[in-house]
Image (tube, rainbow, N blue to C red; front, side, top):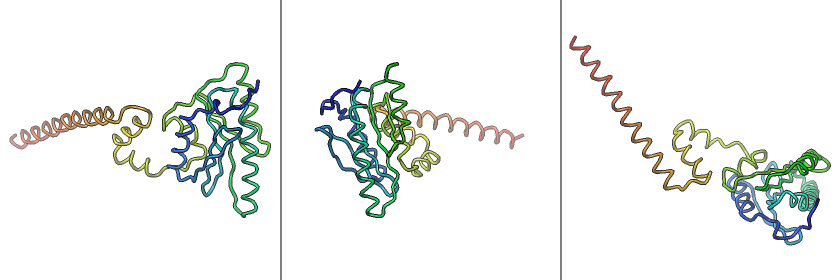
Length: 202
């Protein structure tokens, strides 16, 4: 089942997005490689993660052993530095497994020997898609929650742009909705005002 690991196995778009998402979440990220195939090593105050993005499901099995060894070595180094981290091996792929690989992926994910492994399949090549896949190792974002509560339309605009919609198109759609909502709101206020005046006259 396992194919040889080569640099061609790497999904560079997903990997770049993974680096961006981790850095935005406060991780320090560096790149390393296994047999020429690049992967990410991310560290924050709580976690150390090694993240790879590959083209096919077979590539998941090809790169995982090297990632696990790299994480074990890094965790051993952190123990010497008196750092206490949770460690994760994460492999992303846009591909979807077939019946023959689904069980093997399940077994891989639930193999808790030495490190924890997260395999994400069918990952969308967007900032939001990768962020959803990396959510178990990302901190809760208070700023997003506050924005969503204070201005849900702005939060919606940010979300749909992150999901891949053109920023200008998103801004136009939101501004059009705001304008229409303003007209509706003004009409409602005007009706209420007119009703109050009539009531006063009565």
